[in-house]
Each structure stands twice: as C-alpha cells, then as structure tokens.
Image (tube, rainbow over the protein chains, first blue to last red):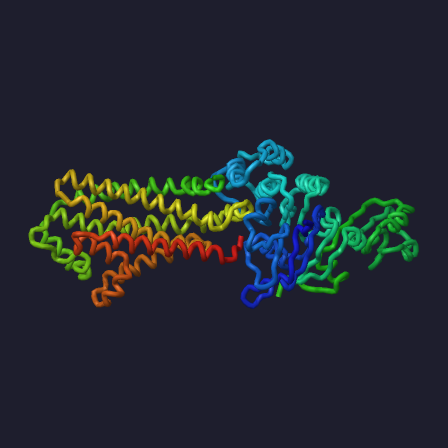
Length: 301
Length: 261
C-alpha cells in the first residue's frame, strides 16, 4: 500500500497559552526532498519533535511512514534517521564510542560506512565529545542519522553550524539519498539551501503554514542585493529598463540594486562596462517573507 | 538484546559512584564501630538526650540486659538509610536528567528504542547500585558482628540491612522520578535531599500522629531494628512496593512528558 512518508493532519501544539504550531497539514511523498522553511522560532523544531513523538500534539495527529507517531514511534524510528539542531553532546566518551553505542541499538549498521562518512566530513572519531566544537557535534549527529541508510531522513537545521566544505558533503548525501529513492525532510532557515536541494518546500511562519512552493518557484523568487563597482562612472539610463531590478541606485561608479529572480539581464547590461568589484548578498528571510508572503515578525505568538 | 546497551552504559556511569560511596561507607563503618571508644549505655542516652531530645525517639530505652554494641549496631541501622539515601539520591537524580542534559537522550530517542525501555534500564542501574551498596553494608555489619563477638542475630542483621537499602531506594527512586519529570540533575538532587530531610523530621517529631510518622521510611527501620526484634517480611514488602510505585510513576511520567531535547 502506498503511503505518505510524512502526513500531518491539523497538527497543533500549545505550550501554556502560546500557540507554537497551528493546524499544520503537510504531506511528504516517498522519494522527495522536502523542505521546511521558516525563520527561527517559527515552530519547525516543535513540528519535527511531534513527528518523532518527543513532544505530544495538543490536537491533530502526525503519521510517519503511514503510522501514527504516538502509537508506533518505536517502529517508525527503526526506519528513520534524525539529526537534531544544536545538539548538546557532552561526556568523556569519544565520537566512535558514541556511534558504537547508538549502532548497537540498531541492527545492521555497516561500520565501514560510518568511517567513510566520518572521513567525508573530515571528523576525527577519537576526539572526546567534550572537546568537539559545535561543527564537530553537528557532524556526529549527521553521521548517526545517515549511518544506517534510513528510508526517511529528518534533518533539523543541519547546516547551521557546518563549514562550507561540510555543507557540500551534506548536500551530496542528500542528493545521493534522493537518487536512491529515499526521502529527506529538511528544516532550515536558509533560503538558498532550500532552493538548491528541495523538490517542494513548506513555508511556515509563526506556527502556521503559509505556502507550499516548488523548488523552481523558490529559485524564481530568489532575491539578491547586488553592488557593482565600475572602473568609471556609468550612465543610469543604461540600467533603467533592465528586467528584475528594484531599488536601483547609481552613485558615480557604484551601482546598488535588488534583483528579484533571474540576474541575467543585469549581468549582460553591466558587462558593457569594466567591473572592478562585485558583491552579491542574499537577503534575510524576514525580507523575503515580507515581500512574497506579506508577513512580518519572527517569533511565534 | 541490543537495547540492553543502555543498561551497561548506565552501569559504566554508576561504577565511580559505587566506588566512592563504597569506600566512604567502609571507612565510616570502621571508624564508628571500631575507633569510637566503648561507652556505657546510660552515658549514650544521657549524651543523646542532652544534644537533641528527639534522639530519644530514635533510640528509646532498651531492655536492661541489652549490650552496648547491640545498641550501637541498631543505631547504626537507623543512620545507615540516611547515608545510603544520600548516595542513591545523588545517583538517581542524575540517571535520566544527565542523559537529557548532555544530549544522549536526544540521540537515543532517534534510535529504535521505546521510552519505557530507557527508563527500565536506567532504573535497573539504580537497583543494582542499591543492591551493591546494601550487600556492602551487610558485609560490613557481619565483619563488625564477628570482630566484636556481639552475637547479633543474623536474620535481624540481614533484614535490617535490606530495609536500609530499601529505604534508600525509595529516596533514590523519588530523585529518579524528579529527574525523569524535570530533566534537571541539580534540581532533582536538591528536592530529593529536601524530601529526605522532611522524612527525617516526620520521623523525629514526637508530637506527630503515629499514622503520619509511619510515612517516614525511617520509622519502619527504627521499628525493625529496635522495637521489633522479629522483623516481618511484610515490612520489606511495604518498602519494596513504595519503590515500585515510584518506578511506575517514572514510567508513566516519562511516557506522557514533552521532551525539550
């Protein structure tokens, strides 16, 4: 029987009088990489915790692998891998001991694959947990999430503390999982990551689902602040009719603007002049949210 | 059984506790039993009464032919639960809470292991620690009995030690429950010690109705060692069932709790 890898039905969580997750309904299909995008404190981690039965919903329900997450959490966890965000790992044991202990709780973990993952992430497994920095701890949690090649991988802000090289390794692992028909549920507050990795993205704000976008749609909505420094002053009219430009300002030889979507026209127009410096900056999520979804403010009420 | 690895991991954590408390208890026992100069029975009671009137509640006037060492052994059986309780509160308060604080619980619960299995194995660790400390106390008392030739009846001695261990287990279980519910080691230990002091006060207050005083596990111990020369197995069953209730409460509490991990 075909089932959704993750399905939530009006999932709601209240802590005291605070509404953390509000009537959230999601459907994640087998084999897709599904993004869960939202600013900090928008309810992403709480939703994941409800999927894993760490936290019980106030109302609604979550089905993972077609099973109720509250009743069958044990069965569900046999087939999933989970990497938490900001996991505090302390203790005198080293990474290898920790992974050995976790592998003992599962059957059939290939230790060669664990070592391969550690070498890809450039992580020394003999380092005691107490001596690992945030990046090292994140790498360790990612290894334990991938080590048994699970059907469903749930990653909560996995790249938050990772360096550039480790991020590439993570992206490659997600791509590989997708190629093997496995599903990834990826929570993040980084838009660029979602554009790059996900087939579909659920956008959450203050605990409520505000949109479900295709990865392509997100790419079209990409917004960049661009600053171009030319060798000599450029005429403003050369850029007046360039597509996808907003807030265009030209002061002497510096051009500043916001590009929404494809930057091709700007680059072609700018290529007529000699460029001495180029700065491209991604906007923060709040600006994107305000522009595209008309919502403001970060914290869940 | 792959899930049993949590039990062994727990034991690796508890081993230093056992060593520290075991050495401490051994030194204390030999100091109290062997180094303290023998004093006459009236001296003991006059000193106790002068220092703290409530001590007369703990060790009432025994029969005239009771040996001094017998009284000391019996008094020791009253003090022992206090020492053992502190040891088990210290361990019990940290068993689950520390795993939660150091992030282990987050990763364990990402593996195929049910919440009840974690609690069972953690509590199993506490039980083994309680048993090991009780056996140690029993051995120390036997050595004391043999060295001073006081002929303390073996059944009283063993049951006395068992009841000490069970009293301590109740306090350890309470700290364990608090650790499970709050996920905070220091807080669980602090409240556990607070409750221990409260139960001592319950036991010591002479004006308190006897039904309320029975709430203190120490009352049962005092009765066992002094008032009741033929200790009943029922007493041990009562103490055991209190521990079982606390264990079940830990299971239910952990199952229902939202984990902020």
